[in-house]
Image: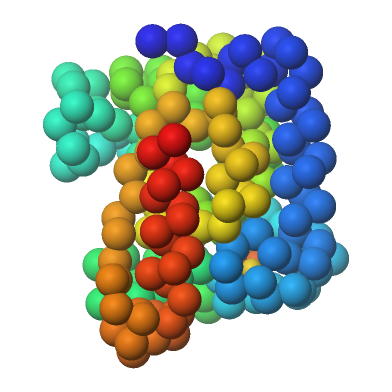
Amino acid sequence: MKASYLKLHEQGELQKRIRHARELLTPCRLCPRQCGVNRLNGDETGICGTGARAMVASFAPHFGEESPLVGTGGSGTIFFSHCNLLCIFCQNYEISHCHDHGKGRENDPQQLAGIMIKLQEQGCHNINFVTPSHVIPQIIGALPFAIEKGLYLPLVYNSSGYDSLESLELLKDIIDIYMPDFKFWNPEHAKQYAHAHDYPKFARLALKEMYE
Ligand code: SF4
């Protein structure tokens, strides 16, 4: 399978997406939280606690994902620290919620590209971005460096579904496989467990967009 982002790169469209994506960080309106902070100025962060650089908690071939993604070499998961939804029952609580506990390392675009290449070299069948909604510009920004180093694997977008249509539009023909984890149908439950009463509204729209 030839990853769709390679064509965008050849056409010069990827660079346009990178510029547009960075604009969404200042003020930040990347996800439905619409915090409005300037994430590029160094010390401002919103609900997701992430600034200009993506923080990675861990990366490795993962054999516990859905079987079509795992194959024999594993899915190349990159677990991003922090999150824009922050469910109180999160199974990755330490890396999603605990901003001050040193769970992860900040990566510039070249370093993030290097992680993708390492996973490819380890025989993974795809690059699987786990909890990526708050770092979409950083992911897109790393791709040209990864492509220059030979990245060709398809990309998996593994989010909670709390994504804005504008940010998903940026990912069109970049992401090959969407794997959202839908959380709540009921706004009251979304409010109680994630302080996000609008989750059902946004996630419905996001899933439709991902499907299309
Ligand atoms: S990505 Fe983070 S800072 Fe931006 S709107 Fe969402 S939660 Fe707020």
